[in-house]
Image (tube, helix red, strand yellow):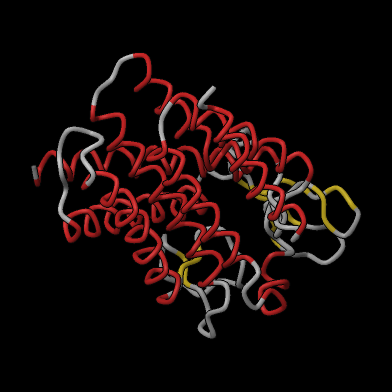
Length: 269
């Protein structure tokens, strides 16, 4: 009955996020299921790292929301996360947690850390980078692009990515220090690994967003957007693969960050 603690914690945290309008109803249900399952199949370490991501990113999503509203109008998802976005950010982490429960190995945890560092880095880059006063530049060619454009990056966004990944690195490093996974990782090493894997995964997200992610153009306002409907009208697809949605991009890039974390850990230790 240990999972009861995970259910209780998930209900409290996801409930607060729903009340603050950071989660939709489907997002609330998905977050409760994800958190409870993570605690049941894993432990406080897996659950705690997931919660560290969720709480920090939710708080940032409310920071200066008015300044970011214009940019967010073109995003596939707005400020309220739905079930799809919750799954894209935490679904792979849950699969890794289940994998560790079935076939225990420290590698599952290391990849998990990279995955969570990436989704946290990407979220921090979006939330903090969206407040940048400088015009974003395309990750492909360096040209200036409108705020909210997929693949657009800023200096503030890159710094936020590093900090977001480092934050998850510190949280996971603390759990490693208490010896749950059979080896210790120093605080500085955990910070560096988290920061680098998160940054690289976040950059992979931007690159995929600028190349393969499906994009549309609104017939009414002419804006290039990530979602198939805008201004209450169906938008026209202008590039990318129809199945490569923002959620798929998030999931793929988080796997990139996870593999990078495993590679960095192997190289350092």
